[in-house]
Structure formats: structure tokens, C-alpha cells
Image (tube, rainbow, N blue to C red; front, side, top):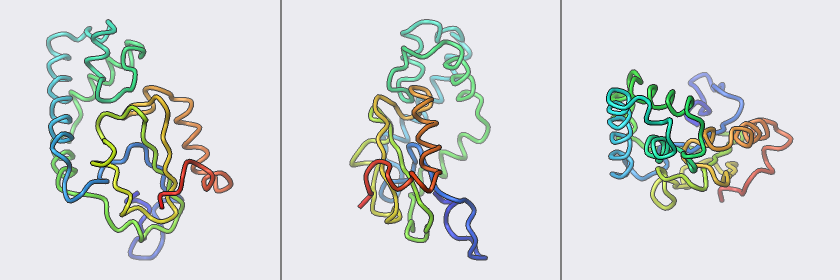
Length: 183
């Protein structure tokens, strides 16, 4: 959504804002459980990659690897889970990004004048309702969507519905009909 705010020249960096499980919708700084969870996911990925790289081959291994990200991690195929674990373990700039994320929240959404769609998975275990889903800073024209059965990373659980939502949210003819108004 930050990319949709007006630049100094009063142009926009994007035609519309579509955010899946956006971070920053909390008060002042990231809630403790999010800070702990993100560090735990990173540490677990590093350990798994080094000690048990084939752990995601089993249902239990996939569940343990992606319980924070997926609504149904045991249903996911081995290769994408193995790739996700590797990518989390090796992500450059992870520490710097997490530190920056922890200290900020999204604000000044009123400056955004383009349509915005915010979507959360119904099984998101990271950005919890009431803690990390504040609506007060979002622009008035925001539409709020829940992706049924999806976790924090909806593309893992239902790529087709996620892609469909993004396409409909970016279409001016359908964007205003999605989900519910934020206010």
C-alpha cells in the first residue's frame, strides 16, 4: 500500500493497491508474538536445511515447516515446501527487513486515492484479528476480503483463488464489489 501513496510530484507509484496479509496494521510496533514467530521460522528453516533437508517429504515435516504460513501445510507438495524452507533460511536482508518491520506500522492511508483491496487468509496464524488487522489507517475505499481456508501465505493453500482475487481486485469493473467495505 505504501507504493500507492502520492509521490512528491503528485503521481502514483501504482494503479491500485492489492495486499495479501499485509504487515503493519498494528499499533506502534509489531506485536511480540509476530517478532518471536518470524525469528522462530527463520531459525527452524536454517536448522531444517542443515540437519534434515528432506524433512518436508513427510506430512509431519511439511506441517512443522510451514505451520505459520499455510492453513493446511500437510497438503502441500514436497518441492514447494523444500524450496520455501531453503528460501527462508537463505533470504538476504531478512534481519534488516524484520528490524524495520518491527518498529513501524502502516499509517496515513488517507493519502491513497486509488482502490485498495486487503485480503487475509481465514487460517492466518501470524496476523491475528484484533492485534494485527487494524482498519483505522486504511483508506476509506479499501475492500476487506477473507480467503477461506488459507493461511498467512494464501498462495500456498489456494493459488487459483488467490490469483483470481488479484485479477478481480485490479479490474476497476469488479474491484469495488469484492469483500466488504473497510468502514
